[in-house]
Image 1 (tube, one colour):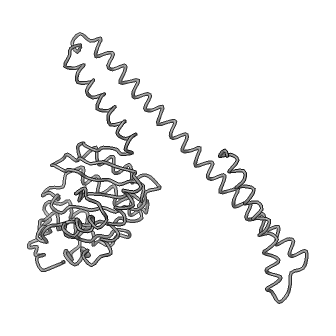
Image 2 (cartoon, rainbow, N blue to C red; image 1 turned 45 degrees about the vertical axis):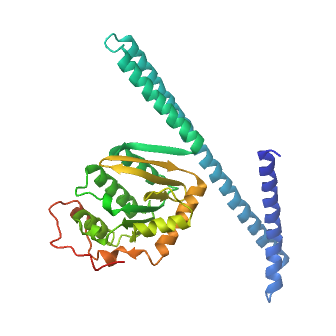
Image 3 (cartoon, rainbow, N blue to C red; image 1 turned 90 degrees about the vertical axis):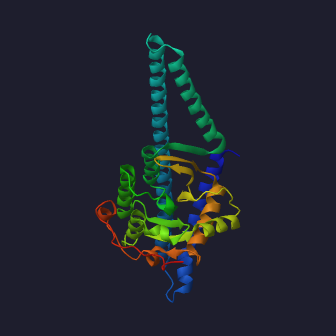
Length: 328
């Protein structure tokens, strides 16, 4: 049976249900009411019920069709943009070949390797439904923020490895921080839950770790944080049969998952996936961790509060930080 035939049958079924509701509602009211409806009242009420339900379904179909058309337009614009970029690359390579100063094996081999790498990445995405990420923090920040911009991704679950928090917040981290903060305050992002992963509670004593943890106590609606020991994280993952060893991960509204493989200085390596089973397992694991007794509210470890200005102000320091007796 074709898709159009199924839609036609479904539409006919809805119309029949509307007719049943149009007849049944006045009948039930007359049956249950001490004063039965007159024939005119029942007919008018039945007509209003039928028209209301039908109008609601028409509006739903109109909205669905509009959203579908908008998506198709965006897809075609993206394809045109990709075709344009590929055309510019082809033209540029022709110039490289035509220029006597560039026409040598070094330049040609370089761009052939770059194109082969792009081809492998595209094929990897097609076969595994993943997007590899191995780039500078600036580029990875743009990738993450593009996910926040989607109206479909309003909830974010993430871990943050405390030992990865450096003594200096670079500019790209500040850009990323203020971008998701603005989206959270404007309710474009409704919820951010973050699990700080640590080996030793003393890791929170470092200035930037303390300030970042303390910021999550600032009372912003939708922003929550807890802390979990690395051993507990790995134990829970094992219970959910997740044995990839990843500690740095983020889940965007059950639509995407980011798994960080390595972070060294400004270079980040990992991948984004839309694998439904992977997302489901990680979401269940995160939720179980979050609700477990092993997860400590961050306020019990770092009770102070910091503002964004204090967070990124190197001159703002805590005279003495002692968290050894706090938390788990």
